[in-house]
Amino acid sequence: MDDMVTDLEGPWEDMCGTIQERQSRMLENADEFADMAIERLEEHDSVDSLTRALENRQSIFLAAIEKVNDDFDNNLRILRIESLSALRSSLFGKAMEPFYNKCNAEFGRGSDARRKAIIRGALSDEELFTKLMRSLKDSFRANSEATQAKIQEAIVEYLRVIEQRFDLVRSENVARESEQDPDFRLRVEQVARAGRETMQRVHQVI
Image (cartoon, rainbow, N blue to C red; front, top):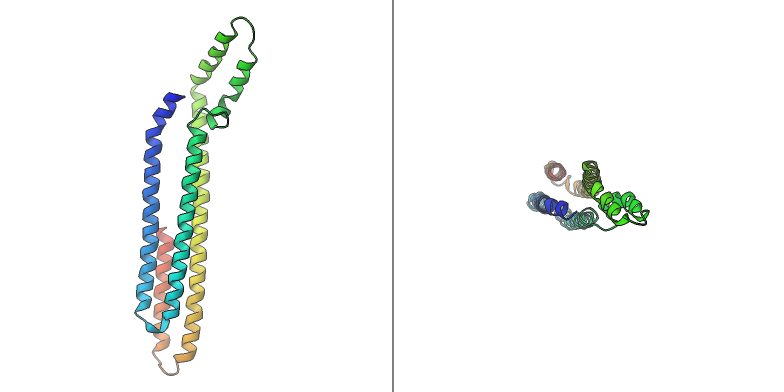
């Protein structure tokens, strides 16, 4: 077991480092594109309320993504303990449970040697470790898919609220000023479209 842990420690740390780098890039991309939308809106004084709404939602959105990432990191730490330890509750401990039970059933003269033989036989079984690796992959995949679903949920909610704000501000401003400024409707439509396109790029990049 110790040898297996040693063999997996390096790849595990490399994987965690890669994941953390990807998480950082994801947050940077989301922040960058949201900032881009705000900058484009700031060029239009008539949509100040929309800009403020976008800034508020950006903060909420990024906080939600950070929480999802923190939860995922915590789940990875738990998975590491469950996978790379000899605890009875770990994946390895559960896989060895039948062999432990066989050892406990051994009594009398020579029982110690028989118990050792049972454990050695289990640890030399490649199928046992193949199953362990499969269980580890399945658990990691389940955590990853759950995290991805939460991120997508946060993105959809972010875009939904921003879309509503675009529509609300556009309707209010157009109704109030279109008669005084014939070109105003077109400008608002252009700003709203640019904002939507930017938010869609956030969705695609993440």
